[in-house]
Image 1 (cartoon, rainbow, N blue to C red):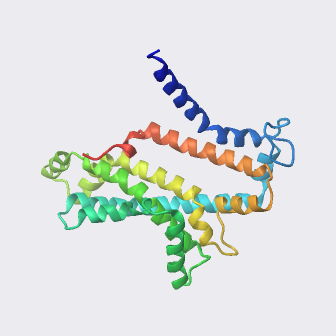
Image 2: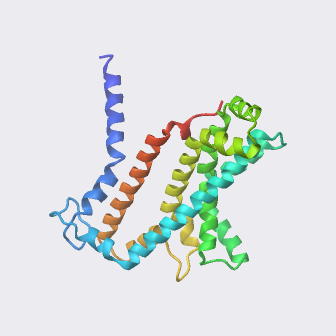
Image 3: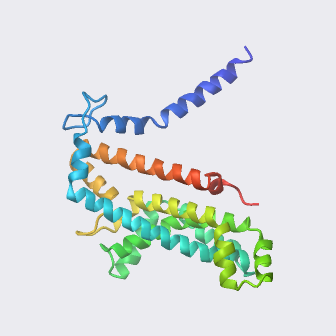
Length: 265
């Protein structure tokens, strides 16, 4: 009788872990449906909707825009976070705690609230409906995901390695490029990949800043869903799930996921 609560707890945990991936599994299976509407379980097997996605100029253009934008945002936020992390860990300045909170503050506010604030800024600068405004929005949202792993890596740096390099005659730029940056590689890779994923998948804030000739893949999916329930959306979603899993697997292989979730000491 005493073992019953433990068995119930394990069953509950198992049901939760089985429920979480259920929507993704349903979407992936629905993408292989041969019918012209979403149905589950699928009434057959067909790659028709994957073919439509990969042969559509509009969908591929939106995919290219999202990928290019995500790459630029990832590079920008990682570089900015690198400089911010170096200033935080190497310089004794007042308000370091407040600065760290500022860098992580996008995590504290709902995306809708951030979108309204950025829409006001973009309207003041007459930049609504431009890729510049979307870039700014994505950079703000991605900053915490680039700053945190880099800061964690910097707090782990062995400064004796840098001191040894300087004692051997290395110039400051040589120490930074040949000693510091290689030791920061796990944090840099984590920042780049996480920023890319967040930017590539972002839709909530982007919807507020779109224009007639400006779109991204997630926002085009959102617009298409409002008009029809074509299984091509399931095919694109399955493609994005596979892309995200591939990036996360690459991240885990290169540096390990524990770097991003590890608590500071």
